[in-house]
Length: 348
Image (tube, rainbow, N blue to C red; front, side):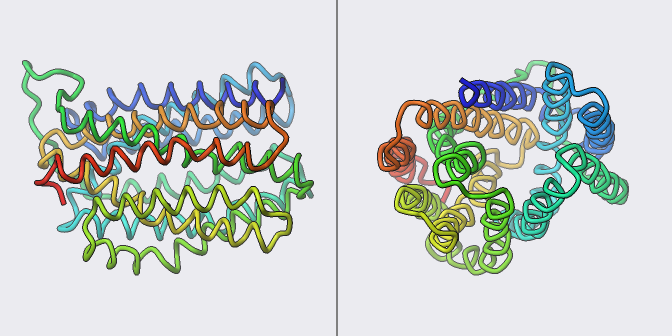
């Protein structure tokens, strides 16, 4: 029951974040991307501090869940604007998003490993204090950003982007991100409860994720440039499926390192390529709104993923059933990508 409850909370978190990003992308287009990033990144700092004080001194689950959701809302509001700023500031969006992945995963490499140590020594509340401190540094850096003039929003244009190509792409992304999101709740619970892996060891498996991005993201970018973005999405999805399914055979830390390496290589193909495709499909117009809609689709997939994974963990004991069923949506996503590769011929 606890596993299902955790899955429901993460699903609600992702759904709220996704719905809000549809509107928040519009806000960036209308009022300026930098303004949206600065205002709501400050809100993220405030809620992280409240999470620290709540978990440290109050320990009321309902308040924690509420603050957890509010913090996600703050992050969701400014995320489409950060993506739009990056896309408009780069001559080659795929290159810009690849560079962002490297920078992001320098934090990913240190965060989980450091987090496991901090939880073991001081407890969970201090995770939020550290996150708040890091967010303050990020807020200061956001103030130094050079804003890019947003596109003009006409009164007759709809709040939600009405683009059939984007809709087809979004459907495939939902299936893909159901698999992608097994990275968080499903993997960590499986490793801890089914394999009896400690928090420190799980943190180091996530550490591998960050290191692999830093070392291999740029070579993957160069490869995707040659093979084309749709082939890049197909390759990344296949690697996700192989990597997660291989976890059914893992029992040692080294084996989990290998599976996480494969999963992360899939991530290297998919994450920057997906954002770059959105930039292409939008044609540079209403980019914040397109990014917001794309983030809605990814969030919807992320919402389904933890709930789906928690259901599998609660229902099955056989690892091959758990991970075999977990990667089926990835196969569906690959079939949709193959269709899109030939249907959307202008977006290679």
